[in-house]
Each structure stands twice: as structure tokens, then as C-alpha cells.
Amino acid sequence: MTKTKKEKLDDVLTGLLRVGQIKACGIVSKEGLLISSRTPPDVDARIFSALCSTIMGAAEAASGQMTTGTVSQISVKTEKGTIVLIPAGIKAILTVLTEPEAQIGLIFYEMERRALQVNEILMEM
Image (cartoon, rainbow, N blue to C red; front, top):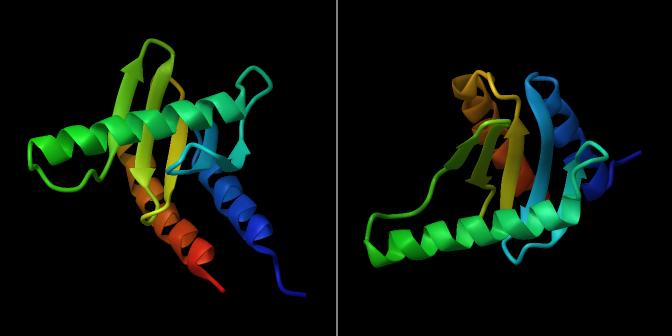
């Protein structure tokens, strides 16, 4: 039986969590709507989605004003971890919330791979 888009996207997030040192991850539309997520109970996925979309929108606006090109990744380091956002095609954002001491290089690498998968899944007819 063929998997649905939702099942395929859920598989991408499940694989991303297997990298380790990731507290939460999600796929968000550029408009801030939740597409899919893996979050602990203390994280409201819908609010997180809206905030990630806002962060990406602000970064893209700043990049446009400064004519620095397209945004390829955003990271916000906090005392309790790092929030990482990368575009997953033109309509979606892949987001991650890491542990404080996470290996960011490995997470960036995996997110880039998974963002390509998300884009392919979302573009399927």
C-alpha cells in the first residue's frame, strides 16, 4: 500500500529525531500553519509553528532589504537549546529545537537532507 503524504512527512521527522540531541522538530508552512510535528507535551506545536514562520519571514525581509540573497538557515541559540530553521522548498520550513550541547554541524547536515525530502513529498501530485 502506498503511504500518504502525511505518513511520508511523519517518517521524515521520525528519522530526524533519530539523529539525537533534538527535543522537537516540525514542518511548517511559510504562512505559519503546522504541517507535521514531533514535540514534547510542554511545547505547543501550533504556536511554535507560527513563531518559526515569523522568524523566517523577518529574516527573508531583512535579506531582501540588504540584497544578501536567499536565506539558507537560521539558528537562534538560547540557554536551553538552539532553534534551527531551514527552507524546505518555497512553501515550507523545517524546524528543530535542539538540546543545549547539540552537535549543530550534524543537525544542519541532516536537516538539509531532510528538507529536500520534505520538498519532494510536498510537490508530489
